[in-house]
Length: 94
Figure 1: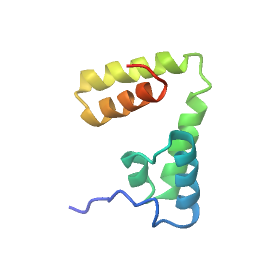
Figure 2: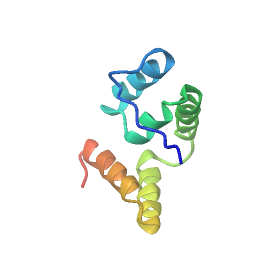
Figure 3: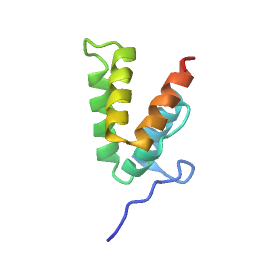
């Protein structure tokens, strides 16, 4: 079965490079999930647009992250838990 690989941000070009640069500027890193989505710039751009649209909802960023953390724990998703912990450390929380 073919697998998608996570792209190296230093080796990409074109639209993918532009999107990776925007993610890097916002998060300080390009997470593996987004590096993998970069195989299709349309998928990555769609994901980023959806995430941006959802950020304008009524829930605060803190509440959204608490929900994400609870769902990650419930699903036993180690990748998601690491991502949530990264966010909390970034804003100075434990």
